[in-house]
Every structure is written in C-alpha cells, then in structure tokens.
Length: 326
Image 1 (spheres, rainbow, N blue to C red):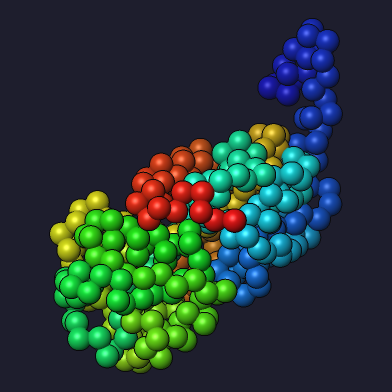
Image 2 (cartoon, helix red, strand yellow):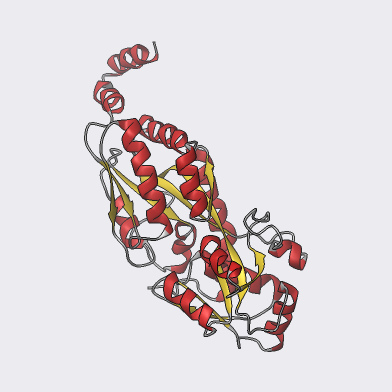
C-alpha cells in the first residue's frame, strides 16, 4: 500500500521514485565494506570483524573489513564521508568523532553533517591504575599525591582525544590534580611502560587492565564508568571513590554511513545490526574485548555523538587543546 501510494504521488508530482524504492528493496547487490580508521588488532577492528560476519550471514553478501588508519581516525573517517551514499561503504569509529572537531582547527569533514549514524555498537570503561611502587591504596590518596607534586607523575595513551586521555583530563578538571600525558603510537607500548613503572599512572581499557591487575602487576583504584564492572566488583567508580556524581567517561564505538544514504538502507542496516548484537557469540566477543553491548536506534546514536561533543568540548578547552592537533 505505502509503496503504491508513493509511486502514485511521484507520478502526480512528475518525479519517479521507482529507482530509489528499487535500490532500497534490492539492497545489497554487491559486497559491503566496513572501514576501520585504525590499525588491525585494536578494539574497533575486533568489533568490525565480528559484526561483518553476522551481517554477511543476514544480508547474504560479503562484508569486508578494510583499514585506513592515521590522523587520529580522520583519514578513514574522511574516506567514508566522501564515499558514495549507497550503503556499500560503512565506518566503525568511536569517541574521536565527538572530540576531533574541537582538537583539529580544520577537518575535511563534519561528523554530524557528512555521516549518518546507524547504531552504537558498544561502550567501554577504563580503569584508573597505578604501578605497585606508588604508595597509594585508593583514588583519594592518588589525587592527594598528584596535587602535592603537580605534573610529576605521568600516564600514557594512544593520543590526545582517546578515551584514556579524556578520562584523565576529566579527572584533572574535576579535582585539580595534575598528571602529565605522554602520547604513544598505540596502547601496547604504553601498557608495557606502565607495567615497568616508567608510567606511574594508567587510564587503561578494562580488558587490558584486568589481566595485569589480577597478576598483581598493577593496582586498580577506580573505573571511569557510571557503574562498577562485574569483572572488578570490588573496585569503585570514580564517582564513588571521590564523591563526584557527574564524573563518567566511557569510550564507545558505533556504525555509520555517508550522509544522504537512503533512509531505508540505514534502517535495514540498523535492524540487521540490532539482530547481530543479540547473538550470544557476538555478545561474548564484545564482552571479552571489554565492552558492553549498546545497540539502539540511529537517532539515539546520533544523540550520543552530539552529547559527548558538547560535554567533552569543556574538557578539551580545560586542557588548552582546542585546535592543537595537526
């Protein structure tokens, strides 16, 4: 009924909607690519490959994962933003979508104007950790120590704008505790230096931190999420540990397409991804990678991107990082 009505309406208006309707109904007719704007082996890669397998099953066409890393995910994101809006080139990206427009004085794309949200895949918490040689047993003691010697202790992340960086700087903004940031090419070397004591403090993704906390190589003081993790039930949230009710910083990853992708195709991708995110095997992959399944509508994911952009702009301004990245 709806299809016939639209076609009749188009005939009256002198415009043919048949090609658009046919495109959406036939989709997909060829392989789909999911672009990972980072190097292989990272969290976004793990999520992308897991989702690609499930979408391949449900859509009946190959779903391939390609890597276009660089410039804090901007290279791969720009590639997708400028791709044909036909549903065959997708992007998986995270919280950098919310902060890069603030960090970079000029970007060749706009996350809100040039990309269309499909669904939020997962959220991830960080763990505030210290090397065992640091004489503190809780987050209050660490904050006091950092205030006593501002900037003396340091932490490392893959770069400005990462969830670890934002977690640390949000803590500094809320408490006045200064800690020095050291940028690395990736999480692996930063974690190695943290375990070795070169980095005294860490804001480490949960799955990475967990193994070293259990082995006694790091001390976990708090988690950056709004709720405790069942994997570390005895570790309080930052809000609990310090009495800061508005502290919460979760990383997240979601699926997007170029803007102007037909709404029916966005809806189909959202529907199939939602089904995939209910699959126990996929849920386990996300859980092992330290994430919590989110799902939800395209509108909800779009609202998440904009909300984090608004609140994290304050953090970037606090650090003096507005327009600092190149």
